[in-house]
Image (cartoon, rainbow, N blue to C red; front, side, top):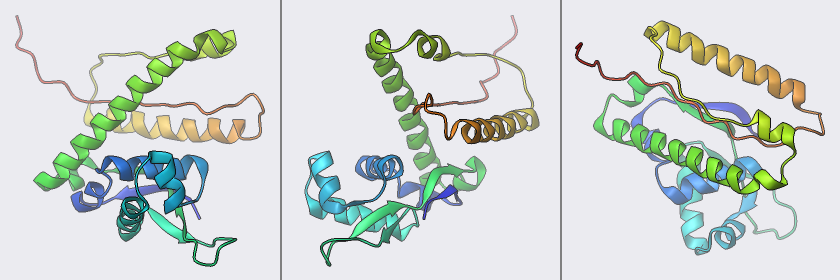
Length: 191
């Protein structure tokens, strides 16, 4: 059964996600529900042995689990255990391996943003104007303390949870990709 969030506590756990096929399989399981290794292999044009191996590796770290399967008695279905994965940068970054894994994950998230922006540009002609007007991207440069940035994250996720609950049964709702980031910039010398 899928729970809300998986809080990763160390770099080794996060590293388990840094294989591109594992991350893509986990994403598909989260978005489309359970699947067999064979189904995933067809979807990603790879062999069943590879998808089986990577599913077992994801299961080893608690990201996926085997679920009851109907039909063939030997069929093994896999499902995501959590809707999202998060981590504390300080905890995960205690090792070089953890810092490398967190950096890789951040770059993957940035890549999703680029892909989503490109998809939106291709879809614009087929979208109603209210979706075109609601979509967007922004970049702000503000001065905040670490506490304020943490508070911003907390409020953002709490408000997002409220909006998801409100729109859950609305037929006008559709999947929306939201990628956000907040990073301190290096100090610049004063002129």
